[in-house]
Length: 187
Image 1: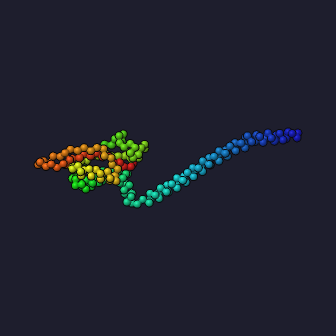
Image 2: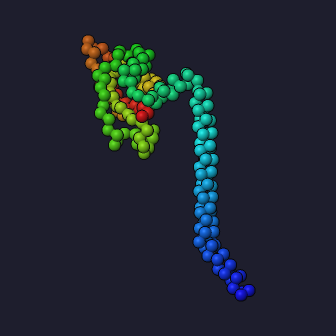
Image 3: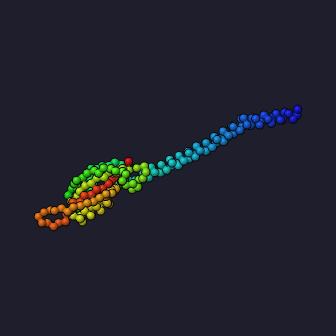
């Protein structure tokens, strides 16, 4: 009888271990792993907030004149009128008459600018347009250089020209230049 009672206690404690203690221990282990994952997520969230605040402070440190320049480089919308006025201003600098034959070129994203500004999610869009100016070659060359140096991102797609006959036996080298450009804006 002295041996039966300890054996019964061992069997009861073994059964209690497998029925109650072991599942509870496994549940506590799973809960602690999940708590570690949550703590990891919380620390990552804290890091992201810190980075966001750093970026916000950098953004707030940009002066308004620099913001204006950034908006001119890659605006958040297309303003065709202002773009034409900007090009016209450059043309006036070289004593060119006003630009003419302005037209919008249909957007064809399959051919345009892949990898130039952004790739994949299409963070930008583009529009093409064409115009004509009348000038001599030297002034036109300087016009194109200034167009290239302007803050607005523009790709010259094509240039064609034809010599103008001014009549009356004048031998001036005056050409009509047809220019097609593509410009971009952020979505």
